[in-house]
Amino acid sequence: MKGHAIRVQVMFDLLQTSIGNIRAGKLRPLGITSATRLDLLPNVPPIAQFVPGYEAGSWSGFGVPKNVHDQIVDKLNNEINAGLADPTIKARLADLGVIPTPMTPVRFAKFIADETEKWAKVIKVAHIKLD
Image 1 (cartoon, rainbow, N blue to C red):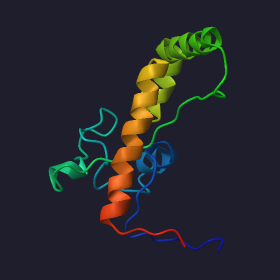
Image 2: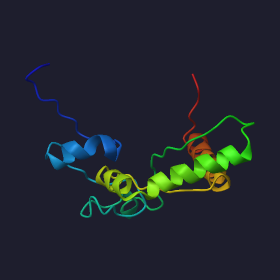
Image 3: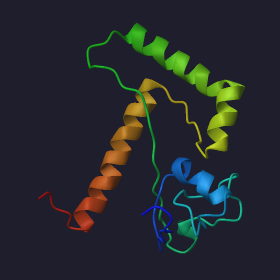
């Protein structure tokens, strides 16, 4: 469809993939799915302002096989967290709308468990079934 504009009425997208189009004026954000406003888009309200309790986000993390020695896990964790603290990396991530959340391996395991529980409830309430 070269030369034809595509109109999208509503979409939920990762900020990292849409921020360029937002900055270029090709997309107009109506709301964000985080619980609070973002510094990157201070005039865009969180959906929770209109739908109390609404919060959805994307996250990424690093994992290793189950039997990797604790010293290796700790070393990886320290290096990853140091990278996330690096001013150049922090600035680039902030420019993309990414909010780094360094965690310990124990805290990350709890985070994953909490996310799994949260979305399991959504699946159950919405009666979502695997085909």
